[in-house]
Amino acid sequence: MTSSLSDRGRRLVVDAPMAEYIHAHFERLDDLWDPIGNPGGYIGLCVAENKLVWDLLEPKLTAPRQVPPSAVEYDEMIGGHSFRSRLAEFLGRRLYGRDIDPEHLAVLGGAGSVLELLFYAIADPGDGVLVPTPSYAGFWADLETRNELTIVPVHTSPADDFRLRMDQLEVAYRSAGRPVRALLYTTPSNPLGRVSSRPELEEVLGWAEGKDMHVVFDELFAMSVHGDASFVSAGTLRPTLGERMHLVWAVSKDLAASGLRCGVLVTENEAVIRAVDGLAYWACVSGDTQRLVEEMLADTDWVDAFVGENRRRLGNSYAQVTAALDAAGIPYLPAQAGFFFLVDFRPFLPQVNWAAEDALWRRILEEAKVNLTPGSSCRIEEPGFMRLCFAGVPHEAAVAGVRRIERVLASDA
Ligand SMILES: Cc1ncc(COP(=O)(O)O)c(C=O)c1O
Image (cartoon, rainbow, N blue to C red; front, side, top):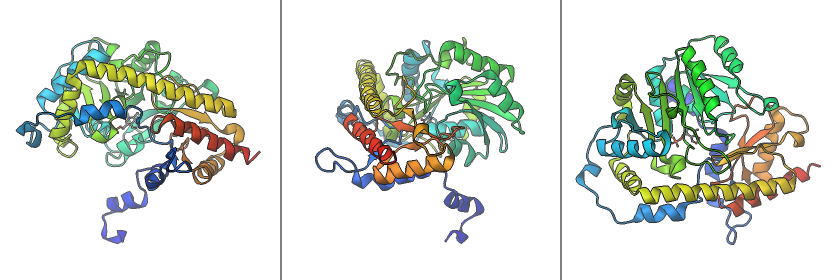
C-alpha cells in the first residue's frame, strides 16, 4: 500500500516518529484499570500527563462563558493579541519576574509545534542540535522528522548521577561532525524530574554564549515542582534574552491540559517571530481554545490556587509511589518536579544490555499490564533504566502498578 506514497510519506509509515511504547499505550486504553470495575486492567505509567487535578479543571472548563465572534474568525496565526498579552502577563508574573512584551510571544499547537517551527527558523537540514540525555523522547520527532536536523546527544552518566558537565558538551560539540546550531536544554528535566539550579543554568548558558549558538530552554514543567526545590527560569539569567536565547512553555503540563494543544515561544529575536509566523498557519491554536485559556489565566486567584494545589497533589502521589518502590526494594532516582522519575532496573537484569532492558519492558507490559517508558526511548547511554510517570493515573493505580512490577521481578528471582 505504501507504493502510492512519496518517499517521505513512506518513511513516516515504515519508520514512524512515534515510539512503540506510545502505540502500546493507545492500543490498551479500552482496558483501563479501575478499582471496582477493572482491577486487573491496564495501568499506563509511560505518558507525561497529569490527571490528578481534573476535578479542579473541569468546573473552569465547563463554566458558562461568552463566546465572541472572534472565537471562530481568522486572527493572527501566532495567537490573537489579547491572548498573547494575557500569557505574557501570566508568564512574566509566575516565571520571569518581569514584564514580557506580547510581541515576543508566539502561541502554537503545543510545545512540539513550537519546537518544530522554532528550529525550522534557526537551523538548516543537516545541522546539529545538542540535547543532553536522559531526554524527553519526543525531541527526535520534533526536530528530525520534518526539519531534517540531527540531534547530537550529550550523554551524562549514571556514575555521575546524570549531572551534565561542560566538558561533555564540549566533546559532543567538537565531535558532532556537522555545524551545531543550538543547544536544547530542559528544566525541570524530563525524565529525571530535576530542577536546574541557577549556577547550573549560568554554566550552560555561558558555554552556549561562548559558541555563539542558539540556546532553547524547554521549561514545560516550571510550575510542577513538587519537592524541595525552587524553579529558576533561564529567562531570569540576563536582563534581556538577546538574539539567541529562546524559552518554551505550554499549558500541557503545568495546567494539566495536554489535549488543548497550546504551546508558547518566548523570544526577543523579532526575525525568529516573523519566520515562525510564516509557518504558524499550519500549527495554530483554535480561536475558541485561545479564549478558553485566556479566561482561565485572567482569573489569577483561581490559577494561582490551581498551581499550588497541583503541586501538593503531585507531591502526594510521588510520595505514595516512591514508598511502594522502597517497600519493594526497587531503586529509583529521586525527583523534585514533573510527573515522572527514573527507576533503576539494572539490579534485576540478567545482563545489563539493551536486549535485556527491552525484554523486561515487554514482560512488564504483557505480564503486569503496566507500561513504562523504556530508557532507550529517553536515549539514556546505559541500559537498565525506565521512566515511571505517576501523574496520569490515580495514585492507587500507580501503587498497584508498582506492586505488579514487583511480582514480575520476584518471579525471576
Ligand atoms: C520536555 C517536553 N517538551 C515538550 C513536550 C511536548 O509538549 P506538548 O504536548 O505541549 O507538545 C513534552 C511532552 O511530554 C515534554 O515533556
